[in-house]
Image (cartoon, rainbow, N blue to C red; front, side):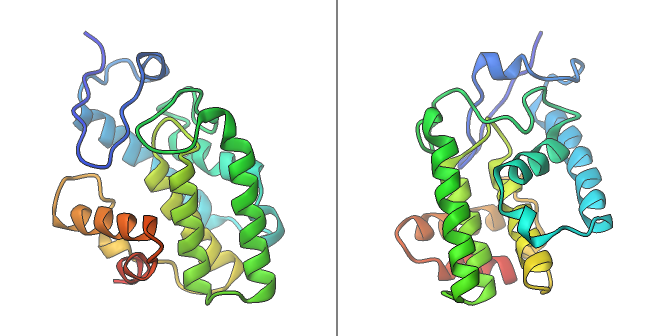
Amino acid sequence: MGLILDYIDGQTPLSEVEKEGLLIKIITTHGELDEHEQLNIEKAVEWIMRSKFNPDKILTEEFVKKVHRRMFGKVWKWAGKFRKSEKNIGVEWHKIGIELKYILDDTKYWITNKTYPPDEIAIRFKHRIVCIHCFPNGNGRHSRIMADIIIESIFGREIFTWNHSNMVKPDETRNKYITAIKEGDKGNIIPLIEFARN
């Protein structure tokens, strides 16, 4: 039968080729996919909590890919690999590497020069990397975990609460999150910072 996906607002549709990268062939619905992805993400969070990351290694392409692979590698064959298809959001796929380098370099600059407060640096990184949309799927969840790693491992601060939601279900919390992302798209990052800390 294959994987049938119903997308909600803010989700990026997968191409047929990307769907073929599903490692667990018994999954046929979006609900089942969400469950398996969440279990994989929980394992990734356990790995993050056990690990002591060198701050100099966090803001690298290799680390960005490694986190995605840890989050989705048991579900998707392409986990940790840049997408090779165009999406309804994000830069053209062949520009992902250079755009990611720009945000990694910008973030290092912000940290060194204390351009913004720590929360704002982490959330600006989160917003920019989700706008690049490096991977076929899981970019929002990946960007939130990256922001948590930055705030905790680089700045020694508490991770964000993200309204105590994984934003998978189409509810009021997800709507607030999408609205905050759209405000960030217009240059107003404050609602996203407030959402992350609420």
